[in-house]
Length: 257
Image 1 (cartoon, one colour):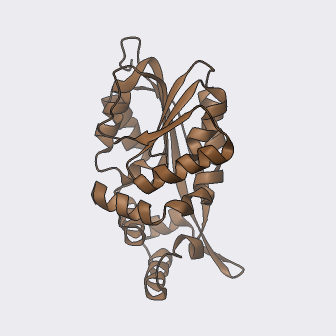
Image 2 (cartoon, one colour):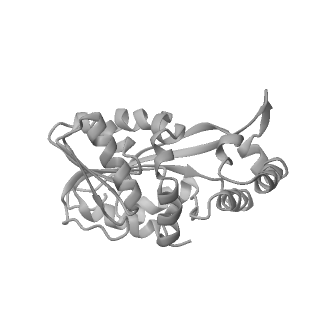
Image 3 (spheres, helix red, strand yellow):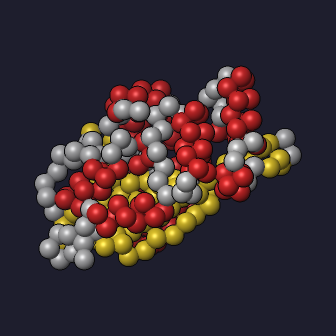
């Protein structure tokens, strides 16, 4: 997995993210706004914005949001959505999550939702986030999480087979360690469950690959089965994923603690 493959994968599917249920209407979106309690004078940065859903959720509550991505097609979609919604305080521009083109201490808030599992270096993303946040600034992340050990390895392989741009979902303890190592004091974390429809999730693939993915869903290791919880519901196959929501702050000296 590399940044080029991420750009290719997301570029080919950019418009699908306008209506993607987990991205556009997932429970974590409003929960994030509720927990962060954004303020009207804040400058905010949204990383890997895709169609801009997180940026647009925060825009009414802050002074300005920079909605950024590395995929040109995603930036086009986000710009079109900003215009369509009449959002005037969002700037859409290119930015790389692990090499941000912003000054130290520039932002009050940095958000990143359902994207870090595509990043080649989550540690670098966390360090860059801490760098561009001002003293007391907030890093609010939502991303898919997996259990530790064999079950987590299986679920990551399952996801990567479906989407080659998938890098690696971390476990919740790995996220907690990552915040600490980046100098961010974690103030809140929780886990949210999301229900997936297999037929929609696998729709981009041909019937043969869909059959392979379905077999993996139903016949993985017991710990993975417990986590994914596949079942039939009418003519659909339902399974579950989990999102971790993490909110931390830099310290008074621009570092955690």
